[in-house]
Length: 621
Ligand code: GLC
Image (cartoon, rainbow, N blue to C red; front, side, top):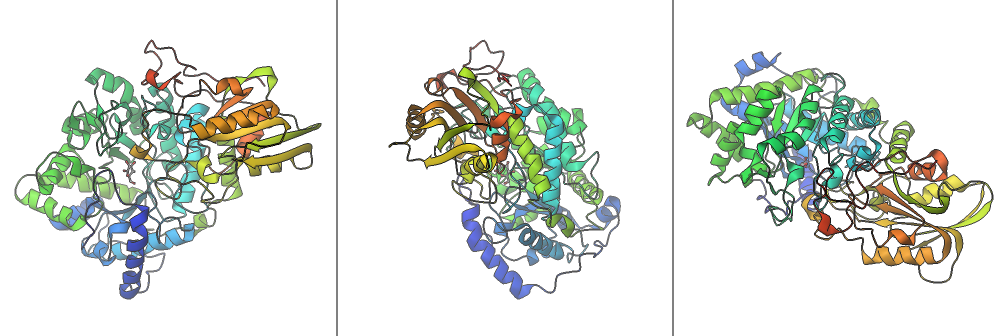
């Protein structure tokens, strides 16, 4: 019934989503009855213990199973098998990638209406990657990726960010976010570096707790979105060259002593667990050659035992299929016995349920392990109030992308910027007097480049992919009514033009996960020549770099009087112009900046001398 599993490293997301979602929609239209009313009270059971006592083994296995929407060709399966959860992977919208908040809410409510038709009427927990805002949704506010939030060092700001994201996720009917990533990226060549707050646990831990509080509040309740600390454990510590699925470093092997693993990578989980995080996602990576998805010691003994984690441990997308067991049933048993409570399948969910049942019947999985997993899942569903209020509260839907939400992101952008160089007081720019500014570079007027990966689609894309304000648009707004004249040369930086000030905006183009692994951290020849061109036409030159990590800029720095690390700011470009025109830089580097790629891995305390150290950031005004 379900499409075959995509080969590792080529996981199908948005591309397949178009076809299967249309199919699913057609089938749903043919088979669906009228949707249940929004105030419907779900559930033929009234507490975790009550539900557990009424459930068959197959129903328990269903609760432990999470299917991706793009692989559910018949929504009736949600009712028939009593699925515990449905997720949208990157780009998995209502009809392919994108979709408005209300279209998302309709989709999620539709899945929910099937869950409520299951024998016990247990609602599903719908999950999504809301990693910098509710980033799959057209018109949602996109915040700076975590590396920029790490540069702010501002826990209150991170909490506000995730409080806004909570509301924008609630507006789509979703109650579970696969965020925050509390990874500690130690090698900037990793394609997920930008998903982390920084290279040192002392930066990550307080922001992890703040993020959890923003999503959940002080405890899981009826207006919470359940947060997920990911990816447990050591995802940011993999050794270059060990990446699995054809990647260079992503999903690789973290080769560290237990003492170092605990010292560098565990503290953010302690912090997230203390803040009450509802779920933890297991990492694709290995620790000293052993896949994390099968590591009973780290999942059960350390996370659930030592750290006292009482929530849901969820596997990563098809992560259990990377376990070394020779059969899928063996992989299922290995993962569940290691301590995984919910399996992010995402495709062969019927087989998964059947295998959990068979593994219990054959004694491979203890019944007590299944009961513990289902208890954790049902506890979360009751705490979130899903049984009483399973459907979207549409008052939140109307607020997705609101001006108030954008204002929080704008402030976050301002606080994320790090000033690396400022010769001759090139910055701040003045709003008084008459002078000319020429703008150029491939990202000056490109919302997709400004937002990076995990933006509408899994990988993100260049161009206008959602609603927001590019740097160029923000500059036009900021200078309206002043004596400043503006020109935008885009990528046509050669030719005849001149100006008092030049502003180049360029850098990396979007990527996500292992597809962003880099063996060079190269600045790029197009960026290099465009920056040179602009700077050679003006008196004062300012470079604004969009990148998910430090790239090699040693040869570029001398070209411009001012150099700004802008990270991946998201949809609110005014946050940049606010700072350029005088609100001041406060961001500090959350990572050590290498001189050359041969410095990698480079981290504070390792004795190497970076181009700019951890914590660096000028604040001249
Ligand atoms: C991915 C990621 C994980 C994400 C999941 C669901 O492969 O590793 O961060 O939450 O899939 O999209």
